[in-house]
Amino acid sequence: MTAIDVQQPRASAPSLGRIRSAARLAWLHLRCRRVPAALVALAGCGVFLWASLAYRWWLGTGPAAAEMPMMMEGCAAAIIAVTTYTPLGETERATGRWLPTLRLATALALCGAAIGFLAAGAAVATDPRTGVALFGGVLPVARNVLGMAGIGLLCSLATGGLLAWVGPLAFMAVSQFALIANHSWPWTWPARPPTDRGGWIAAMAILAVALIAYTIRGPRVTPSDNV
Image 1 (cartoon, rainbow, N blue to C red):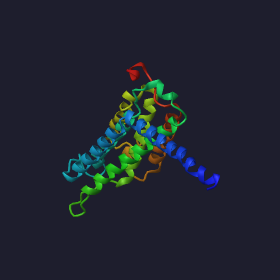
Image 2 (image 1 turned 90 degrees about the vertical axis):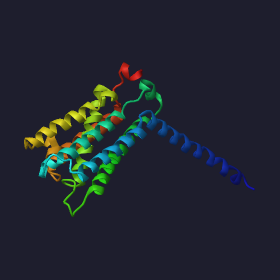
Image 3 (image 1 turned 60 degrees about the horizontal axis):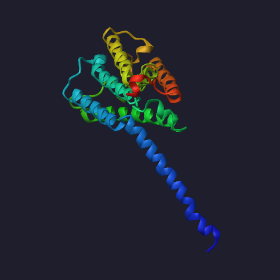
Image 4 (image 1 turned 30 degrees about the horizontal axis):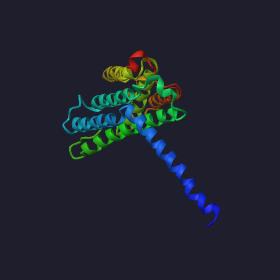
């Protein structure tokens, strides 16, 4: 037996330990932000969207059929925004260099989960024989969830995670009025056609700015956040 043979098993132990530590850190990060509960809530949004389509709960035909899906997209974005809150407050910011990476990964993963649940609910409800289908397909779902989630992340920088849900829901209400009044502004992208370039640019610009700011700075920590 050579010295190399003796050292190889020992070298693998620290690597395995680092993997376990990283996994534990990620799990604690998700738990303190109630991400498992958020996933259940996002799945509920998908179920509600399925029911609204299958049982024809929408409020009109044509573009007006986007009103109920838009509500679910706003609710999904509000759920994502609330996960920015952590009861650990300032103490978490001293945990190390991985915190910004975990913030970014969690936000993107939740956005993907929200889009997936809503798309799955719409797919299950789709029935070509009766004409039941999600207006515009999955494209507006992705655009609206990503853009409104960006608004929620930006709100968390100013209000903290506990109140960050206000931004997406308020924007959703404004977009509902724009849809009803047939207004077409790029900054009310949920009311614009699914392939509208201006709407996509506005939504993705908000998301990009929000992800950068949220990843670097994190949500605002107020005295109430530390209770």
